[in-house]
Image 1 (tube, one colour):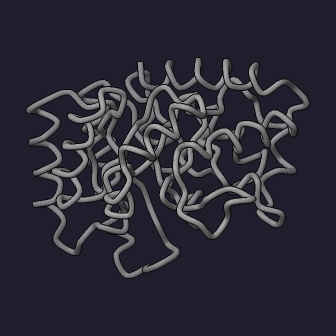
Image 2 (cartoon, helix red, strand yellow; image 1 turned 90 degrees about the vertical axis):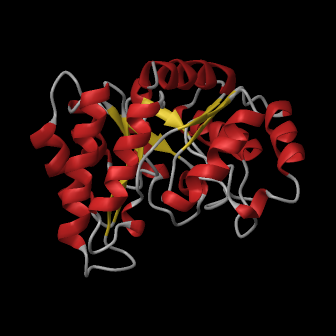
Length: 251
């Protein structure tokens, strides 16, 4: 399995990070992609990347971290992208759940960071909580053969998933698919498996039956099993396909 979205560097893992990584590898996770949050998360993220050769950093500013005067934040992102190679620009996007006072700043920060990804020919990792339509519209307008990426933590309908797929993007499926009233599971049979990648968003959104606990990449196995059940196929075949997808996404 390939874990396409886990914040392995946050302090919730400080007490047992080594053991957590060992549990993940025992569960069959062979690679981990770490989306950045803001300027404070860069140093701990790069420390984790240095310690674990299969944990790979990305670079961006999370929409909830976008400030009123965000230009300095994006200068730092651009500086890092020019200094070394990152697997993607992320985690970027729009979030209307917590605060709607900086929507225009979030939109502009998203556009600028999408352009960073195009300039460096790397994918984007998109966050779109309560903001699918606006995120989709921005990506559609900027989309071309230089842009690819993933709509992370997808919770929408099969119709919305198809719109993402038609852009040439992937769909990140995590713990929400296991929630009894999550509303996502019913759409999975109608979503093309060749465009799905696995993620946990650890330490958040732990899947059932771990819901309410700290999430970790070892729980990716529970997500894979749920998806396999919904697709009426073997878990091993599902893992093979989603890992191929993740490899294509982060090529």
